[in-house]
Image 1 (cartoon, helix red, strand yellow):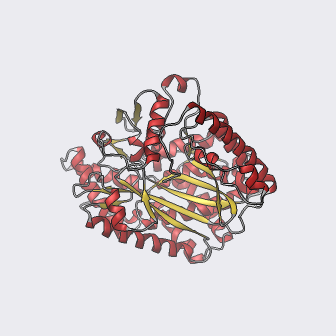
Image 2 (cartoon, rainbow, N blue to C red):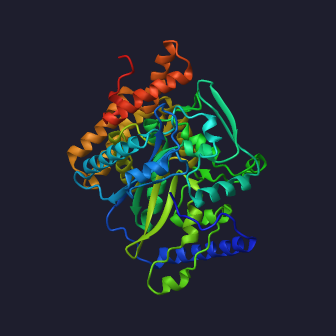
Image 3 (tube, rainbow, N blue to C red):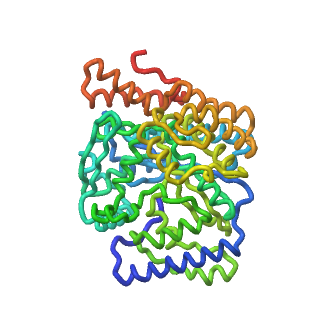
Length: 496
């Protein structure tokens, strides 16, 4: 959900003081990176899964307040729209069979949440973009969750843009969607899995750079968002949709090269400080909420400051790999937050994606000659865009391979790297074989969530159904298979 705020309007004086406080926070953070002891003894991981709520017609259900009351579990929280909720997974190390336990815990939590949601008229769906969502769902007065933060964020982003948000996406097959929105509601159509990796300050740049290099292949094999508002668009439509739905720049500022708030980045980094410094240098505050903390005094007392202004500002800048500063138990720590993957299709697929990411990340971040020293940043960004647009049909540049498909790159190079990385993290051999085996089979079958959705809709349309009827029937079949927890590469098409 992010930090709550106390108001949704701020004076010019408050905005000026907030800017000064953010700069002070940044100075203190720079001191901490040199002098403070950060919690990084164990490679802790964490995960958040965003979910859709649907009604009995498989349309978005504006019901998260009642669903969360029914679930009555602090692990489940609100998200931007009333048709979304989020499941937070407790941080843990990956040693031994911890990933199997994590899968069991998440699946049990979702089963319990689903039963409680159904009791109040909703069902729970893990998918990157709900196939049945329509433009009308963003025009409803009731779309937004009851939170001052969300209201303030919507007002600030729309005020900064000064005009309606434009969503204009064309898919590789030629279908195109163009719509205008008077709010940031289309942003809520994007539901993701967020993977956290706690790292030492001295290692942060290596892990962030490795995550950036991996982004294209990671996205291509995990794509699960091919439809939006009745159109077949990118295999991971969530990427351009979120980018455009949170774009506070009118076209004139975009033409001038002003950085968008949703961005991949523009260079390899040497320190986490590079990213926070860019935050302060390039992005105006959206939520200038001031705290009473004196971070200098707190630091000099021997305690880690909250740096709440710096953290709140960072939370309104949506890098696909986001830097995180936080404190826990009186100790500061740093995390790489990977925001690239969509939700779903199943919990076992989510954990397999997690295993692939963490294993390859650790391997590439600890190599003597890292992959990002052998490729340009623009190549990594192009890979990311192609992975989102074309999914399994993408072509990537990778050192030693030149133009290579996602399945070939993963099978020949990235899976062995992920295996080595997971072994170094202490993951049990049978667990590695199980989850990386799911990724291997997905690549061999060339069937991820996006491919299955596209083929299922094509089959229904071949039977004479119109697009929305085909999407609804596909979603019904998807939900049945999603809750079976059988990996997506094993899913049959409707009618088989």
